[in-house]
Amino acid sequence: MRALPRRTNPVTAYEQIEPPEQSQPEPGLDAKMTPKADLGEDTYRGTGRLEGRKALVTGADSGIGAATAIAFAREGADVVMSYLPEEEEDAARIANLIEKAGRKAVKVPGDLKDSSVCRELVETAVRELGGLDILVNNAGKQVAQKALADIEDVQFDHTYKTNVYAMFWLTRAALPHLPAGPSIINTTSIQAYSPSETLVDYASTKGAINNFTKGLAQQLAPKGIRVNAVAPGPIWTPLQPSGGQLPEDLPEFGKDTPLGRAGQPAELAPAYVFLASSESSYVIGETLNVNGGMPTP
Image 1 (tube, rainbow, N blue to C red):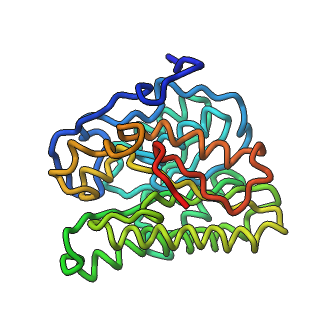
Image 2: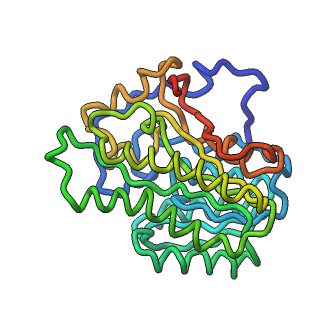
């Protein structure tokens, strides 16, 4: 396994990609992306920061969720992976990487737009891992539309069910199983602060996630449960070529950041590790922005 140099120039640490115009049906597969995303599978080295922890990660088959699951395992955590049945090809590869790290990987396919699936997912995680102390609400839906009139009711409903309702259902189901000391991490976005005109519905869900995170963090802090969020910028994941961006916009994806490039999922994983670890014990209700320098409030 190669490692990144101790000191890296963030402008050139990862390739400046220029994805060709491409499209995939939702939900998209990492295996079919051009170029492939960097999940840290060849670079992330753990140091035991999550030794013996039990994690549930949604959207763990690809992108940010996959990079996080790999990092968690290499830091010593067992991982329950949530993903859609159509994403089995990607999920199998990530599960194999978790097991190669010497940790337990539990694959649980299912559609989180169903509240009963969310409840059963938590129950499975608790049963298979013998408890739960890290919950990462990461699964997301993003479909770009040029005009509000193009957003049909079903898209709006599915975007909110995936991004907001599932987070609520999973968190509510997990709380009775969480002892003092666990961490809940929600994935929000730069879109919560600087919404794109083509992502009106998606951006509004991310604003909701920010506020859910801050409010719940205050409620649960006295119980020793920390709630935080990570807000990625433009990250190269299957979400983008499967409808998250207009195909004609893909070649310029991420070039408007101060770093001049899109981010890779591998660059997000350390943020989740930090928030899941005891090193962030005094970090509560915060949104950690990992966006290549894009300004936020």
